[in-house]
Image (cartoon, rainbow, N blue to C red; front, top):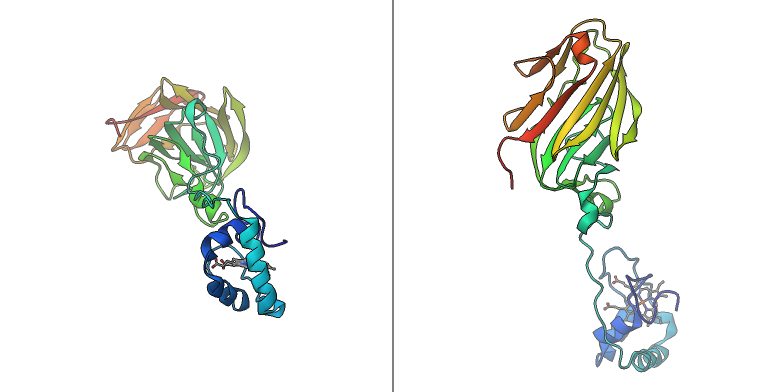
Length: 272
Ligand code: HEM
């Protein structure tokens, strides 16, 4: 009674239900006895059944007839295989912004996935303090992560069309090799505003939805001189920058221009 319930509503508590047992061993007393005396290892993710040899063949046979009688008329339906992210939203709920901490591919473990509308999404890395990549066509499928108990990464649903450079620490090129320091995030209009500092400069990066495009509204305080913001691979990206001049993938901004500027990202071609 501890290990075998009459019916398993969701998945086995320990072993298969009596209804499943009678489904497998109906008209096969011999096979049942063989299993009970010398159980094998059949199912994944369950313990091995201990041998019931001590019960004795006579009583095991009585148990067999009792199982068959008790489960008479009950139909066995195999549990549905779960192969989707149980936290994935469906329907209209997918169209709103979401922020999710989860292990993601090609970034530090302390990264955050954000979607502005369930279709256009980005990964922001809180270690290197920068936008890591942007994709379009969906958000994430966390199933590989949940299934592996955290030892695997979530899958991106859609296609990445922008990636920052892998080695650079921050979007802002630090003059004195200072490491960026993440200071947390606020949520405004359901989307995050990330805060970090590099040396004496303070930066906020607000993620915004501009008619389905991803905009980064960046504000820098305490900048004393010109700042360089290193952009990533733009070969598949249409980038609109509100301030500064773009030279070889680097946005050059005066301290005044850096105080408040916007970067808007769109894929170059419609990606399906
Ligand atoms: C007289 C008592 C028991 C009887 C008659 C019995 C019978 C069975 C049968 C017929 C199966 C199915 C084998 C198959 O799928 O071909 C099974 C599986 C299993 N039983 Fe029992 N069982 C008994 C006691 C227990 C106890 C006490 C436990 C827990 C400690 C247990 C745990 C399991 C588990 C985990 C499985 C699945 C094993 C696998 O698929 O690898 N059983 N049992």
